[in-house]
Image (cartoon, rainbow, N blue to C red):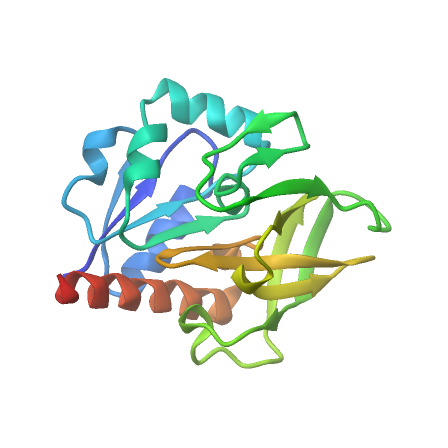
Length: 204
């Protein structure tokens, strides 16, 4: 069975995420320690709140370097995606630096935070396999990522302005929305990630 660790740094919808992964056939471990990443096939980095608070919790738990060193499938959700990048303007925080780029405020948004369901335009990516184009996803945020490499962008959304809703660099992939709150389309996305974890494990 494919094993997935969900990182518990004190801010994330852990139960819903774990249940979604388990429905896809994964054996899920929720962990707040580096040892919890050992021997698993994939890792999910969730997050709500601010990048600064999340980085402080990851640092206190000793998880920053293990996450930077992790080269297997890694899924970032909401603030988890923002943590992939180098710097957040939200609170002047340096993040994990897994992907070049920054996190900026949605200046063109009519109202912040952006809360609710929204359309997402997908690029071709295995994370979105089998998800209909008309699917909508649930967002709660005021900031979004700006990758330096436009080729890293795999999804975009409109809310007062166009912003990045998904990004990928090799095995590291993340989305700004919450798949665990996004009904069948979100569950399918989590299942696609579990499939990718199993394929990566079988390839080693």
